[in-house]
Image 1 (spheres, chains in turn orange, blue):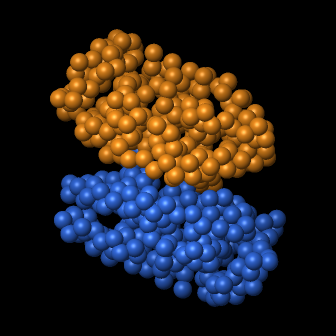
Image 2: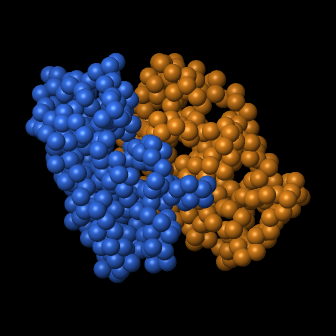
Image 3: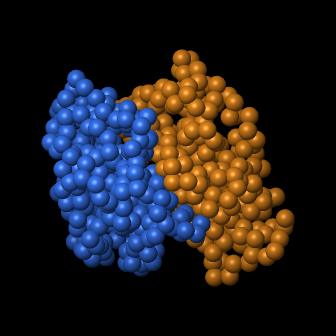
Length: 260
Length: 260
């Protein structure tokens, strides 16, 4: 693998497989200077892609785990976005993702793909084995259902709790908070933990017999739960056992270090 | 196509392609009596499927439009669920979809697939032409991104506004409301309309050059906007023109009548 990035990045130094320093977003210039009209792929780095994320983030974890499960690490470079500085809400980042959320996958031609499910679909279609989103109609339907359910009943609910029911990213970033809604979503997430516990009492993985994108999203939910100190209730023994076991997967263990 | 359903439905009469009467959920018995252990498919009805929905609903519209675009009407029977009676929040329905939302697709073997994106993925994988979710990695990634963006920035935001910022389905169903959050989401949806207007100024469809699942989700959002009397701002000329044009598609025009 080559030592340097194939595109110029304003004010950043390439260091192995990510950019340093992390304070990379002066407000008076673009996030990065891209050359979309002249992609510079070559045989040693076919289709080099960029992930904008934060290593410890629960949503970034979903894509990092997917990348590792697919064995695509060598084709990814990481650019860190500092959430506590609100870099994800500034115009430069919003041009990449209107919704202002992490992670974003940028293709070599400058095309940006946001939303974890969409990025996972991209990566899964790019490389067929192993599959994270299923092959048959039934597999694809059930995986997408459980993936979405993991978002609305667990991960997204905890995210809303974090941003509204706690200080979140701080007053410099959280310009609107609705604490009552945040606490309501916290309670929803706790019910969601019981639901996924029930699911995992009868099958080894969230969408059935095989590891999939849906497992990754529940992992993201429990990573976020750890961060906001919302422990899985003791009685959710199946969920706790599943999480302990799945945490041994290299893709999960190494997700933060992936960009070191 | 056969005249009657292949499974017994308690208290319902099969009428062409859906069940009547619609008050089908006595609280003291199961929603429907299924025979999952004895699927009765035959050559004249390969893979008969059931959709639980409400004809005028914005989320049901997403799946109805997908069914019509795929030409799968003859394989679908509809069961109406009365939202204003809270049938979707009762145990019988929650057994089909933990999240208590419409629509739900039930396969012949009793397997239930909830969530519009998951159902669309199921239908799209079942039958290849035309594709609603893309073929290449890039197409799939962009369609899923714009589909999710249409949910969070428009359709889901309007849904939250309806359930929290208005009387919604009424006090018998809306057991918790957070009006401030509802109004906040209404404003988010209005910003979302401007965003999609910007997108449609430069390309004919929401995810690029071809009609896709992402268009259907924006249609769902604007159907919901019509229902809650949240008009698309006059200055969103591209979005208004796109909606007027796409409303001429038979799949959109006939979505409610599909189950008559």
